[in-house]
Each structure stands twice: as structure tokens, then as C-alpha cells.
Length: 428
Image 1 (cartoon, helix red, strand yellow):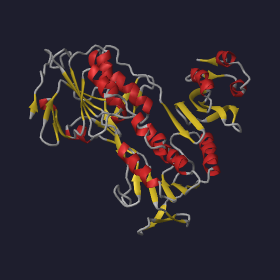
Image 2: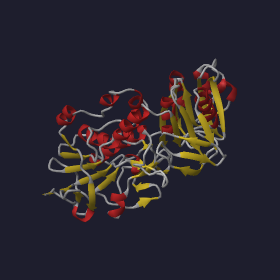
Image 3: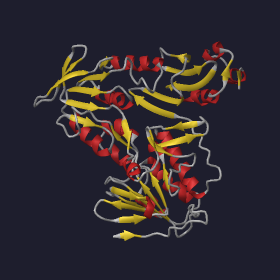
Image 4: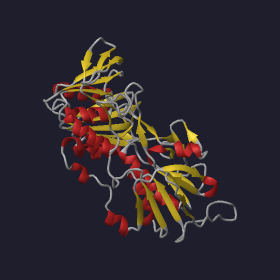
């Protein structure tokens, strides 16, 4: 079955403005894709919107998968990004189980597995990422789990019930959040990472050390600066020999070593590809003016940074999706200036990070011993990032110093200093 559209161009061959007869097709129903769809409606688009998901679930939020969903049965019913009645009210058509097989830009057509073809006036690629896998521990191997989708989380939660010896490969956010859930005193948990500290790419050394202390206090065996030398497979689970000589037999293995952007459709269609994503401009346009990309697959131009960037955070997916939705209707002010940010919850620790988390020096404001403090990250005398550990109220003020130059580091570090005084001592 083929679904045609009105494929108009203006006299210069560029896309004509969208109107009530236009169709926008969004491939990917994660956070970025959903935000594109609703942002289109909020911007006044009255044409048709088709949201394609390759999963069988209603669109859902991913951060709870490594926290609440693992901890408690039934939480999966609380993580939906939208409901059928909301989609109906916004006249957004959602098609589940729709896997895209090919993209034909010359015909403004996308082909689905199963034979259907869908025409578009604008196409938005919001396909997100897939887990990076280990050749020796591929998905589907007995006792081995990856965590990216709701189905992944439900399988892992089921396997946790009888697991007593857990190996987590990767000390990034996903691995540590899962470790915090699994280290409940009923099982041994070992975390393996070749880096010499946890969350090495996303956290300052001070935050890494703080989290390491908390995980070790919970009984987690952190094997940092090590890698897997050999794997011996048995019916009860693999036995790992590490580069430091340590051996560990696991009945549950979780691999969390990052993600890779889903850019196969874009590559097949001949769109411009950057080293780590689909090349887009400030408005989210790809090298084909009828096609946009949103969220973590986009190597987007950030006007605040003055360069291209790709982020894998919830905040970016939300903000960039909304931005692209607006740009589809009105691209007169395409500047995208969103600040990088992420959060993670581990045990009783709530971490929020804004800006760049690693600088030339760190300044701590608050009490590390009590677990309530801010870390300011500076390059030279400029604040390039701020991390909050259980200090959300102070963070509201601390974020105001991003991009400013600090002349009095002692005042910055002193929690007794009035924020107004600290701010006045920051010269732009």
C-alpha cells in the first residue's frame, strides 16, 4: 500500500511552507519524537502528523528503566510519555510496530517492513540510539542482559529475582544506577571498567570519588582500571578472569558500555553524516531540506557553543525535539542554545549536572561529609559547569554563574557567602 502526499516546492526548488494539506512523518516515538509532534501542534500546524514507533509499547520515558522499573513491579505503567487520549486530542496518529526498511528522498517516501510506503512533506528522524554490544557477550546470550528498552528492563527485573552473583560491565550512568538497585544485600555485585574512575567521561574526579565511596559502602566490588581477559562459559553463567587476575562467576551479567546512534536510514538515503551522528544545522535540517533530525542522533549546531555537538541526555532530547518542531513551522530564528545537562539517582544520592562536568579545577561549596554540596567546574577563572549532589536548592543559584568569570574563589567555596555577593564578584 502506498500513501501519497502533496510534495510542493517553491520557485527556487526549496520546500514550500507546510499547510493544512501537509503531512509530517516522525520516525521514532521516544522523547525527541514525541516532543516534535506536540511542538508542531503548539506552533499551529494543522496538517497530519504520523508518529512511527518500532516498539509495541506506548511511548515511554527511558530514565526510569534503570531505576524505578527495576526496583518495583508495576512502575512500567507510570512511565508513559503520552496517552492515547492525548494523542487523539492533538490529532497525532501513532503507529506501533512500524519498522522502517528504506528511505527514498527523491520520492519523499519511506518504506516500512511488510510493504507499506508512506509519503511525506517533511520527515523527522528521531530514531535514537542502540546499545553498544560486546562481541563475546552478544544480546540473547544466556545470563547476559543489555538495558535500553522497556522489554530489556522487564527481562532484567525478572532475572534479578534469583540472581545472587552479578557482574556489571561498564561503570557509566546505566551500570551504576543498576548497581545501586542490585546491591540490596541479597547478592554480590561486581562492576568492571577499564577507566580508573567511575563515570569518567561524564563526571569530575570529585564526583567520581564520592560515588565510588557510596557504592563500596553498599558492598559493590568496583574493579576499575581492569578489563576482561577471558570468559569461561558454564550452564550456571560465565566466569570472568580479569586483567588483575581476579576471577568471578556470575549468574547475571549486565553490559552497559554506551550507545551508538541509529543512523542506518540516513546513511542509506545519502544524507550527510558526521563522525557521531546525522549532520544538521541550527534548525535541525539535514543535507536534504525536506528531512530533519532530532535528539541524540543529530550532530547539531549549538549556537551557544559555536560548534556542532551531539548529546545523549534526556534534557537535550526534550529541548531539541521541541526546537525542531517549532523550526518545521517557523525557521526565522533557528538558534539552538540549550545548555548540556543530565541527572542520575544512585542510592540516596541525587546528582544533577549542568554545563561541562570536567574543567581545569573544581571548587566545592557545601559539606561533602554530609553529602550535600555543589561542585563548580572552572577553566581558568570561568565557570563552565556545576554539579549538584543533593543540593537542588543551591543549584538554582549556582547555575546563574555558568559562563561567568570568578574573581574570589574563597567566596565561591564558602556556603555562608551570600549568593548575591558571589554573583557580583563574577565579571563577565
